[in-house]
Image (cartoon, rainbow, N blue to C red; front, side, top):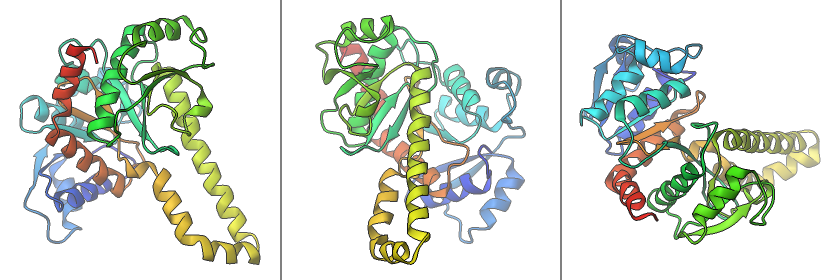
Length: 321
């Protein structure tokens, strides 16, 4: 029931994923979900509705809402994973509430200090991961060290990055640059698998490091700037290709290239962000996530289940790599 166009878009994404073989529990108001499903004609038999009488709204305090609304769809959905009825949960609803529900209900993996929000992003080198993307505004050095381990597992097992490299986002490449947090995290990560040192903001789109670790405040600012810049570039391309006859001709000739470019940098390609470090797979999408993004998020969650990403994260943390 979460997202700007819920339940229509989540249901449409679920139907698309179900048609590709993923078993789905749709959690929310049963009559509303049935109406949304009715728009899809022959609904796959591997979709089941789990009724949840309440929902968490965007203006509510996330933690308080999770504690005071046991029948909210997001809370009930997380309980399906806790009870073993599902292996993954995905929502495009209230981000703070989803973070709280996942942490409080699913609980952290043994040894995890703080779960981190890992956000897949495009780059020249291919997919990259920024962690933390906003779950922990303030961090300690040991959080970043664990983020690096968890991010490498995600990059390798779900995004297909061979031997992911790790960099700390800061204001200079030299080892001594950055805040006390960055310098202490550098000392913890030095010599660990894949660690290449510090990277700057301009290195993100180059894919210099495939796993970027940072505190949640910095990561969220960088993420929103990244998204806004991509939107601005496409706006300017569209304006240039429609403002004159010459531009329209160029647009017609280059349309296949532009469509391929849009797909390459479209957030819908990756679906959702991953809350790493909890018992089970928890995925959080934008409120404006579309049908393709929701379906892709579900399919990547299923991929993570088949590949036992959670188990690999636990093993990686235990081994310190």
